[in-house]
Amino acid sequence: MKPKLIVLTGAGISAESGLRTFRDSDGLWEGYDIYEVASPMGWEKNPTLVQDFYNMRRKDVMAASPNSAHTLLAKLEEWYDVRIITQNIDDLHERGGSTRVLHLHGEILKKRSVLNDTELYPVLEDIQMGELAPDGGQFRPHVVWFGEAVTMIEPAVLEIVQADIFVLIGTSLNVYPAAGLVDYLRPGVPRYIIDKKIPPVKGSDYHLIEKPATEGMAELMELLKK
Image 1 (tube, rainbow, N blue to C red):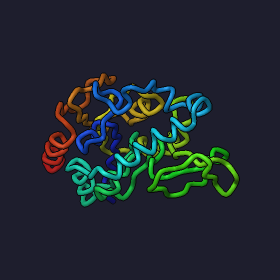
Image 2 (tube, rainbow, N blue to C red):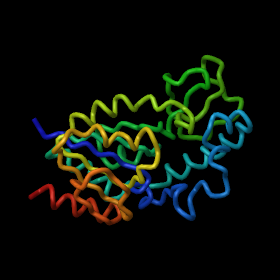
Image 3 (cartoon, one colour):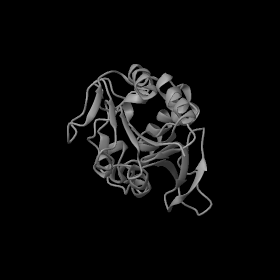
Image 4 (cartoon, rainbow, N blue to C red):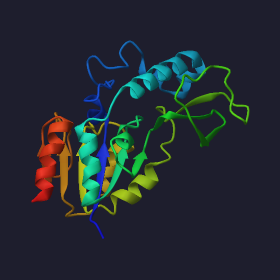
C-alpha cells in the first residue's frame, strides 16, 4: 500500500503555463466584472458575453502546455497514491500525467445543458448560442460559477481525511468552500505549502516553500526522497 499523498492546487500552478488568474494585476478577468462573466446572474443578463468569455478561456487552455510542476506531481505516483484536488478548470494535470484528478470547479473542456448539471459532453471548439443539448437546454461550459453549488466538495473531503501527506500548491485559500478543505486534515499529517506568496493558514505545522510552483515542486521532490 503506497502512502496517500493528497494535493490541493490552485491557479498558481497553471500560471507558469501561461494561464493568468483574475487575482493577478494583468489577470485574464481584467476588464470584466467577475459577476458578469462567472455567475448565474451574469448568464441570465448576457449569456452571449459569458459564452464568449469561456470560449476564449478554452482556447487559452488548449494552447497551454503542462509545466514541470504538473509532470513532477505525476512522477510522484511511482512512490505515492497521489490524489489531486484542483480548483483549476484546465486539464494540465491530466496532460502532465496525473491519473487521479478531482476538479472542484468544473472543466472547461466539458459542456452541459443548462437543465442538467450531471450529463457532460466533451468540447474542444466554441460553444454557440442556440446550440442545444439533447434535452433541449442551451449548452454552457461545465464550470462552477460564483453562487453555484460545489458538488465535488464532499468527494474532496473524503480524500482529504485519508491523507498521509498533504501538499498545497498555488492557491490563496480565499475561495470557499475549497479553502475549508485543509480543516479536515487529521492531526499530525505532514503538510507542505508551495506558493510564491504563502497564504495564511491555521497552525504552524506546515513546511513552507515560498517559491513558484515549478521551483517549489523540485524542492519538494528532494524533501520527500529523504
